[in-house]
Image 1 (cartoon, rainbow, N blue to C red):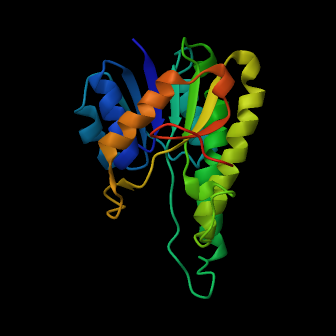
Image 2 (cartoon, one colour; image 1 turned 30 degrees about the vertical axis):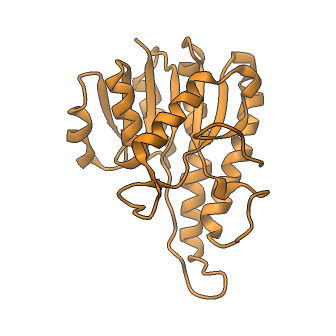
Length: 227
């Protein structure tokens, strides 16, 4: 049985990843911020294991890694993310504390999660680490500006994943950033892509990842995105 550890499973993309992998017979460690998510995740399968962890708390992440010590994780999906509402002024910046919070959750926390679970992933057969990014984090694709906290956090995540692809190469760990598309979720009603379609597409990309593609930035429907 293959094992996945997925962050941000409370709803949307993370929950759908957990649902699909559980339906295909995987053991899933579902990491959630909200304790209230336990019931719906546990109802998916006996092989879905709920973990109430704030990924921006390094002590909590380290404690989870210690609880799972000795367990191989074939696929780590760093999906947990947050967004900042627009503020006043021309740039519509949130206050600096909110900007910093977004950076901590979206860019810093995934690095610490990857570090905490490096040995778990390296001990597996598949050795995959995937990070859910967005084309909004692409410098080359940015033609509209705005959303500074979110864009900056996701651009920083891209750099982190590229570095991880170098630092984990000796262990055979493959990393990649995936753009899920404009997905319709509970918190993003305006998305055009059904969440199940996006996740199915990303799973296809994940399944085909090779060592030569480690550190790449890819779309859910195939192809790559410029950094």
